[in-house]
Amino acid sequence: MRLSCAILLLASALAFASGSPTFNRTERSDRIVNGYPAYEGKAPYIVGLFLLTDGSNSAAVGAGTIISNTWVLTAAHCLTTDSVDINYGSNWAWNGLYKHNVRRENFILHPGFGNSAGHDIGLIRTPYVEFTNVVSNIPLPKFDQQGDRFEGWWCVACGWGGMDNGNLAEWLQCIDVQIISNNECAQSYGSVASSDMCTRQSDGRSVCGGDSGGPLVTQDSPMLVGVITFASTSCKNGPSGYTRVTDHLEWIRDNSGVAYY
Image (cartoon, rainbow, N blue to C red; front, side, top):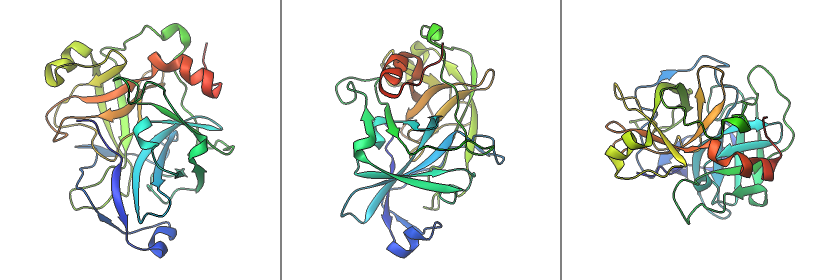
């Protein structure tokens, strides 16, 4: 199934503004399944996204990845609202060091999104962010790696998806997963776009709803190779899916100026 940014009903304006909000869930969604709590500073490149629609008492949550001082990469399907609160720093979900609110005129969705599979990727232009030990970017693959499929590589995926009790994960959860071929992934899903990629499900480890837009980062020579976009219906019995970053390097460069050679 294609993941969605988990939908939440705001309990109150006061709770939302407190930085430690309480929410009523409007749909059930597991957290990263069988993940482990990340140590502080493990993934300084991840940000929590709080997606807001003007005049609505609901919001959605997802994640994104810092790729430069002024750009965050995420899933395009998370950028269909009017604004987003970007929460930076600390593994405490919505209690980071600080946040920026960014309006939709600073969202850039891939033109292929909604027209064909494999292009669920988007950019957010942000205010300038200083890098520290808990807020930093992650490199993209280099342009000479555009043809690499990274099959067999071990990676880490992280996020703050909701838990079985109906609450958001308060602490960042991560899983260690291995990239598989699209042919192997297609055995579970029937077909997989060439610009998508998958990691093998093992011991019940998987991404799930609420993790949308988050990063898949290689363990060796760390770089961002995937954006979390889909998983099996139960998030427990099939591969996890991502938009392939190497197939979108030119689009990222042309729209953000971020590139590695």
